[in-house]
Length: 176
Image 1: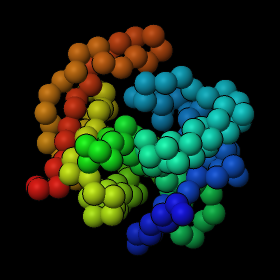
Image 2: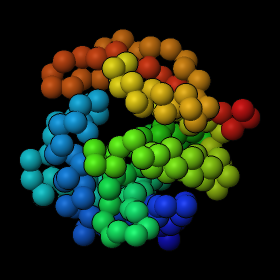
Image 3: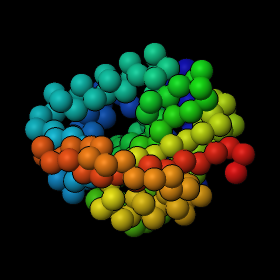
Image 4: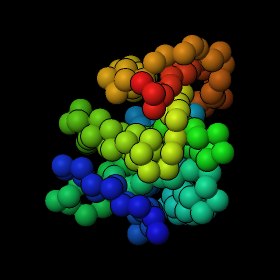
């Protein structure tokens, strides 16, 4: 069973086929993917492939991705979860995105806090990492606000539109 999480304003739930439009709305938006390290989606079929990828990743215990849904409105406004999940080494990397209509309303902080708690307390993580483009000021600030510590800079680590970018690497340890 895929875990459903709730916060004051949000439901974090399994991403299913009917969410393909919500996935497309986020990942086709150039403002959303500007610091994501991937090309914009151009078709709803590509969004459907994301849904399949998230499902397969969870089944294989390589990642877990929740759809972020407002309690008062059906349909996802973004996603959040763990990538590069290694149960053996008790670590994962957090990743997230929201549609711009929902930026600067505290939703990312609310969702990330719940997911971090789930990672440490339910699936036994001892380390949660994050890799963020240097220029992604909002995400860098969010991670610091959540207690992540910057460990360094990875040079030419991610490509966006064929251009290499440096990224910050962060960690949050359960012991902290």
